[in-house]
Image (cartoon, rainbow, N blue to C red):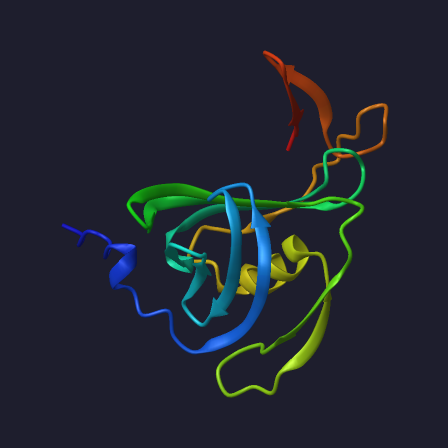
Length: 168
């Protein structure tokens, strides 16, 4: 019998590799400082903190923004992470085409020298998290399908809410 995964609050995130301050997330909703550690992504907000171990990321998607610009990152968790009193089963963020590029000092691993990285928050986090994903998980990009508009998603509506449909 296999052991149950450790609760995310008990995970040692390891050495800090880099931080992106004040990133707007769709889930968990709000602004968080996103700290990339050796073993986990740590999201620190004004009133909560979520530790997302890379071993608990089952699927990861780095996609073009739904309107043909920007970028989208989604992480599906196999074990929910605690964010204050709430449990989260996914982490997602969207950079709009009008958002400026971020600059961050990121290290490739413990003991490595920091290097300047520039890009959208989803692109920077995908580049840092991708190589650290657990067995069976991989960073998935846009599929070959492109709708008539040329961007990676089809514009749809769910009741009165505009949504993007990605065919991967």
